[in-house]
Image 1: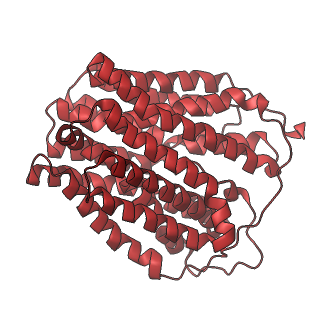
Image 2: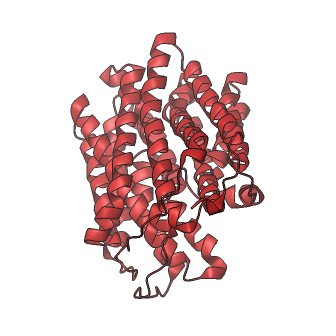
Length: 409
């Protein structure tokens, strides 16, 4: 199971001969997953849970609220792009630890200030730290997984279970803290989540993880990526569409009268649905048919985002969370499969880097743009409709992407 963040170019590098073999690869990857749990599952996605209270207490517009996730996404893009350089210079494990610590400190800062600029900087740092932790950690986790070829997919999936686990953890905490302390208690949520992160990071900091810290460099074939331009655009649309839904959906549930239990249940359902993806999408991801597998998954993702527009019933909202959660955590896996099916191995890092940039720009622009639309139209329903439309358009673009010639180089 792959979360909808970008797989690192280093994922496709062979394991160095000098790397010591971990005694427990599964435990190693579970420990590494603490980085994404803190940086992404809590640091990025928990913002949606406190957004309504922050917006009302601090008198923000929806575009201002969306900007907080825009700047976080920009930080993630920067972190993802510098992660491999940091890993080569300081070691992969040191990069994971440093990125996670940066994200954790920024969570604490969010509990200490109400200044818009300071909060923006904190959200930026959270994104940078999360990007570094995910990309550097993913590179280490992939090499660890290759040490057990028969269970490689399962061992690697333990690392990418991090963000969904963080979503579930924040969903079990934030709504009930807000309910207990009342309006204006958003800063207490950040303080509690930072405390949780402080506990979670301990195993990552103290437990020895015997993986090779060095990340070898390769030179990718100079394969033109123009034939996959429409696929890159599809991934851009996905980045803009999925993050818009995750940014504003809790505010939507709250506006409909959903209390702490409803908000918690909705959020946890999104995270829990991600765990079913290996069984739901296994056959689809195995299809070597250009962009069609991605198109299928994005279509399901769009349906999940559109369902609340059909009905406001608890059953429909739960169905939306489940359908969206099953699909959104699989798109990156589909893009990875596309690259592996259609390009020579030496060109994979360059292609994944291009996808990283396309996705990152999309999720950077999405929250602010959708927030501005909501301000103009006066209803969060428009935000969900725009999110669904972006995902559906992304599916159409992906469906138009044919297979590439692997011998192009």
